[in-house]
Image 1 (spheres, rainbow, N blue to C red):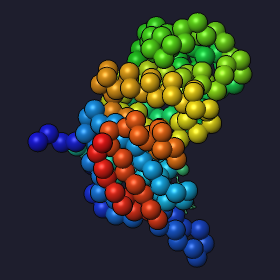
Image 2 (image 1 turned 180 degrees about the vertical axis):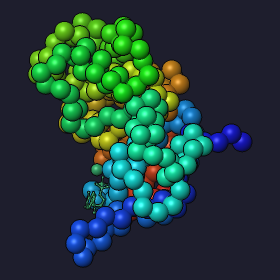
Image 3 (image 1 turned 180 degrees about the horizontal axis):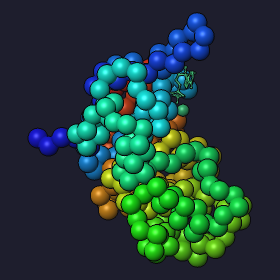
Image 4 (image 1 turned 45 degrees about the vertical axis):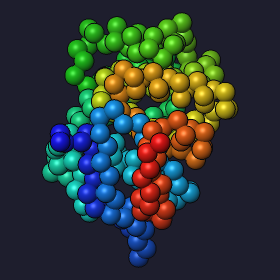
Length: 228
Ligand SMILES: Nc1ncnc2c1ncn2[C@@H]1O[C@H](COP(=O)(O)OP(=O)(O)O)[C@@H](O)[C@H]1O
Ligand SMILES: [Mg+2]
């Protein structure tokens, strides 16, 4: 058996504010293989974003072991974590987080600032990513002129332009109507057939049902792991 892309063993995250401790994530065991298409479901406050943020190296776990491509992430320096995040992990937020005064193309180019793509290749790479998400004809637009679905496609282009092995998405369709959501899900399926591993946190049963594996969370714990 080869090492999974992601392996969490007994991973926990405790937040402390003053006297109060919140166990946002408790002893999570989770392995994600290359090519998995996984959804994470659970009520608000159950720890979904905490799990995703730790997996994306946006946050640090406070207990347990997290291995990314076999490397113990807990032993990496801040610089090594930043490098891994820039090269090997794509992340998509519900609220798109595009730079409003930059064009669509510039938004995607700027995401390569900390990656390994040579400066001279960045524009072509960005154009390729925009083509992949079906937005070539919007490259010169400002985000404010795009629909919600188009903005999320730009965010996806930005996330995949460095060709990471995994795309992590936190409620990516949470601000979109159901028709637009479906078209984003179709895009996920295309990207997956290109070989991308996809993890989607969602409240939406329709979104979750498209994944091949679903994890349920409750009160900081992974309570179910089912394959379609
Ligand atoms: N930065 C933080 N500081 C303190 N508590 C937090 C922080 N982030 C999340 N929490 C708490 O951790 C729990 C899980 O939150 P979260 O992972 O955002 O849940 P979900 O994404 O499932 O809605 C919640 O009780 C939340 O209030
Ligand atoms: Mg959340």
